[in-house]
Image 1 (cartoon, rainbow, N blue to C red):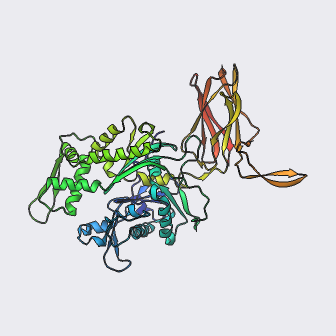
Image 2: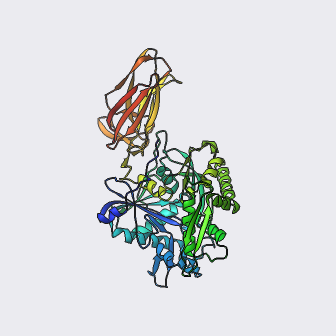
Image 3: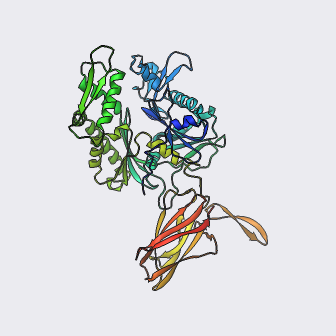
Length: 542
């Protein structure tokens, strides 16, 4: 499956020209950076939102809160704090940073020493973002991301935070699933997600819901049509299953500090110097840059003396090795894979490694992880916005319209038992339209078989009811068997075999999808001669 191409986002200035556009807002609350992405109702490309004065750049807001006084509403947010150098103040109790990891956690570690609670900090940031965005666009649907390990408590917190927001629909998506979907991975995948953010490195091996006809991931609704669903919704919770994870409080900002101290050891590390060090780091992370290439960045001080930050690509790599960054990554990797092994998941079981976060762009980190993971494909979606973009894809009404009330099965020949069986294609709860085709290989059931007939059925859900007649009177009877299948129609689709099939030999590969109109479509190919089987529409399966 080709990864979804999200690297070219719409110009954020277009929103300024068309105020009060209607659509979906995705907020990915991060430890160091919070990402804000908007998508119009008509399904146009997502747009990173520029929200001055709180955004650092389009779509990116530093996850910082500063309490200016004891007044309840006297808070500064994001870039406002950096512009005033308040993040370098000694009054640490006034500053809240790296608060996201403690929301929903059983206990807040003593390293978090702000007077603003983590939950309050997250609430302030979301509300400030909402104030800025609602000036420009009308938000019909809000989707937010949540850590999978604290998903339930995070959901409860989020419900309370969003009580005052005027939005009809609110949905929640777990971060590993969103990262995988943003990278274009199919449901049912097992993957290693490596998130190298501004203040933390987090690794998790996760198994995505879905695959082989199973219900795929979908955003969980918190509010629908203006009504809160907490305690009312029967929607099944479908988050990624974490098989192993590990993390460390080390990230991109620490690399900036290493660079600044390495190049200017006698100079106090101001916000200005760290920002220039970050620019230097980003430019040195260009994969096309030679190892010996040197980049110089000028510092503008109030004094007359000019200073420069100069470093080569090889110099940056040597610095990261010297500081033990690669050793730390290897240690995290070993902890994560060892935990996964205890859950019966080996390294060779992984389908992909997904790198997200700003630090994921550093070539030596990519190369090091690639070596650790041997031949597993390394995927690097847009590093900052990948999770927010994946969340948009999982949101009802944007990428996925609905879920099936009943499943869909195909009647086919079972070679082992030599009899016809109903093989499940899609289960109840399967979101549609489908993200990727479901592939089935069919064999001939007799020698010289001229056709393979397709019969589609609808399984009755165990525990549901049907009407039966007893002595002429209708009665509700509970369905106790999971094998009860109702054929969808009397129409049988017949696929000719040329040459004729031989018993037990694979003949055709079929691809099943559910389209935007909830219609079952089939195409495929003859495995013996690679002749195309043209698309057939089997009608609505609502």
